[in-house]
Image 1 (cartoon, rainbow, N blue to C red):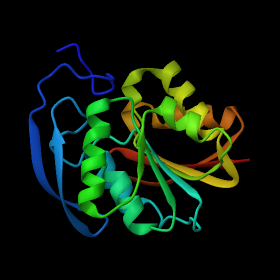
Image 2: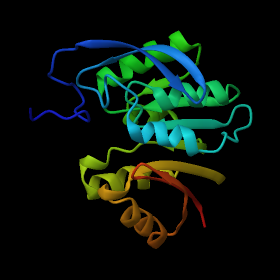
Image 3: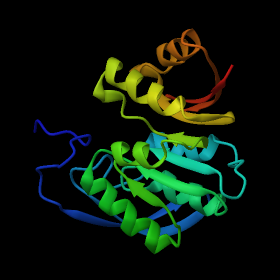
Image 4: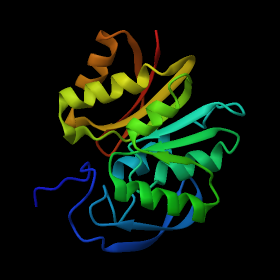
Length: 202
């Protein structure tokens, strides 16, 4: 199959997968689908991320964003643990956005769910306090660097981003690139072949 989960409109049939999942200590009934990243499970990277990432430090009205939301596991966990935040979830995949809307609603989490282009337009004059992301590494290094550069540039002075990246897919080289381009980047945890990176302004 030539299609990827980062296609904007997946061509594969939308075979949905109802799931009962546990996200950061709470259980949810959600729906995944073919054509979406990890559409029938909570992937290992997301599980490691939610186990290792610190509690979100976001004040009322500040923006917290899930970059590359898939069907919404990080969005749901972020909204549940920081309900005071203005929560955003972005993905290029229209099926993922539809599922995230359904799953956040079912979980009682309020979120703005949008394509990156629409979110950037609506947040043009706003800063982001917190980014959580299981980034789409397989889009390629150049595209990944462009994606992260675009969103990290919107961090507030005290903002921070937490990323989960598989070690054998370039976690260490990504951390090195972030530091070389002026970001403070530190590994805050690792498990099962994944690194959790914290990124902030230097």
